[in-house]
Length: 230
View (cartoon, one colour):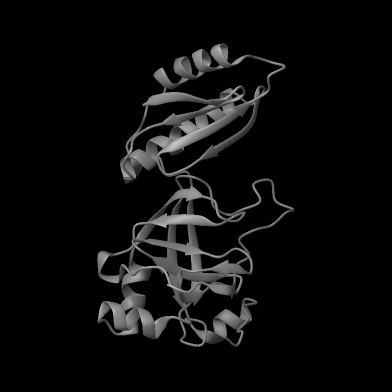
């Protein structure tokens, strides 16, 4: 673990140079502790796959003292095994119908699997929130089954509908709002993932466990889901 200055009021903590569940869990635990312990002096804290970026208020401390504080806090964190430290568990209903799974054929062609098996494999995994970024509430979830690992689209879409469930490489994600995107779309959730009226804005947080639960078309529509033409 290394702490490096970024500028006069920002530092980044590197936990590893490799992405793994173990490192993601350490990042998650450190994020929770640092956010709580440094609430009075930090301006922003941004966790990622293997690091945490922190910005602090220069009126309350200086760079050298802030780094000293970080070292002291980090040295006293009692990291727990991932299985005993799930921040929360989220179950997301997903309609995997081909009318919303816009890339079902491309994913089937690439993997050589029928789409029904792709759905089964995707919904059978438990995912962890590795990082949050790209757009507010957009969470990077790992890991998908290697059998359905597919590359991102060579020509990203200008518009991806809100709630689209997608995969790329060995990760999965859900688009919280309509936006451009290049992940392979395999379904859609009717659940609102980004809400400005909620304290945390997003359903996702670092370290959370996510499960996808397949639902049929009628259930999707009854829950408020919408089906858009490509």
